[in-house]
Image (cartoon, rainbow, N blue to C red):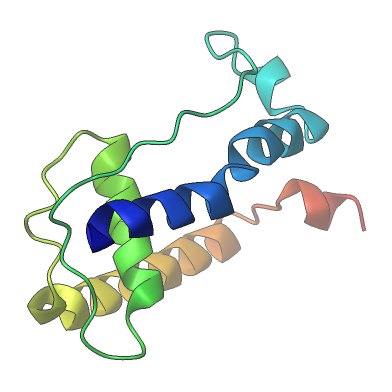
Length: 115
């Protein structure tokens, strides 16, 4: 009973996001650049049996890894508390390498070009 009640509470809390997020994407012209994607409300889907963090600091890393796994249709089985240190180190390395590559190529983001 508690599981169903909690799902209902969560669904009620996040239901506005299924409308807000597509509108935010439209505001930044996301749909104009993505021909195969049309603007519509997002579906809400509950994924069962996801491991949750057992500390107070890994929630962001869990969200990143779940989102990536769900977007790429990859199993979330490796998204465990035990793997968080590795995932954090990997993300830091990827971001650092991207920054170095950006500097070498003198790449600018749209917001940097607008300054």
